Image 1 (cartoon, rainbow, N blue to C red):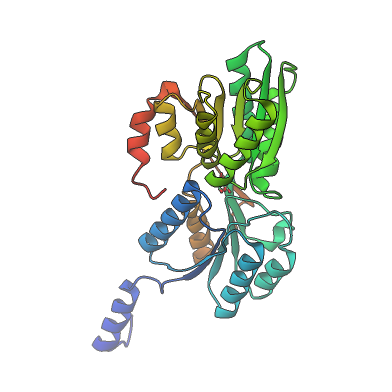
Image 2: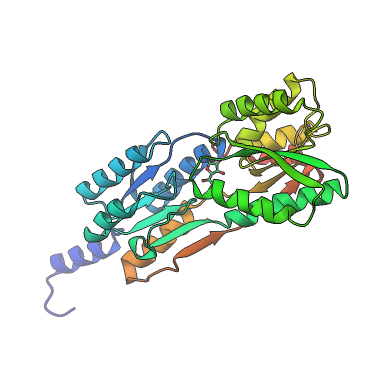
Length: 316
Ligand code: GZL
């Protein structure tokens, strides 16, 4: 460093030691409809803080128009990136185009969109269809050749998890004509609606006809378990219960013999998202369009009480 005065040298050294200016990231979250969603928010806040990013958070209360407003606000604020968990798969082209024109990278978390891939930097999520297939294949193993009428609690209508988990489960039971989905209805990923819809299924089918419940998330399953008990049936034995997310309360139900299986969905989508953004900001590295997180089947054989204890304080 020639011709630098001592002060200038000190200043440049000091500046070089400073962390990069904190990046500002807008997070357009769906809401807090389930334990898993709450955990995703908790982990995202923790990851941002750990990495020194300033996170602007918007809770859309499960309304797409609120998410679109939040994204537009983030664009107007000139944030360095936007995280979006799209409540439904359609209707995003215009606002994603606006973000692109503002040169603000968008990373999708946990759900996908029907928009063109060039409108977002990358999507971080699980293989939603695989989760449904794993649940279907588990049920096939459980019932063998026994006739089994299944009722299904679907997630939010038009969301990628509801569409893909339904298709995956149907693929998992395909070829086993003894297993039939006799009723299928959305309960919007919430416990309250899971209980209400299960009550209607039990009234319609009389309970004795239902062999299994497949719920697109654990929260709807936990609500349905309450309805099954109030109808005088034993969840987990009279009616098998399989769902997705692996939240603490489903392990508590498993430990009580009231649920049978769940497919894990990690709440840490933000870690891979921030890794991709940091490489993009620093070196212009363009990530793959889909960064997949792993899914794992858990059953009553996996010491559910111990898993409950290990998960119960993680922000669900
Ligand atoms: C799936 C995610 C779903 C969870 C639900 O990737 O979007 O949304 O399975 C949540 O618990 O409501």
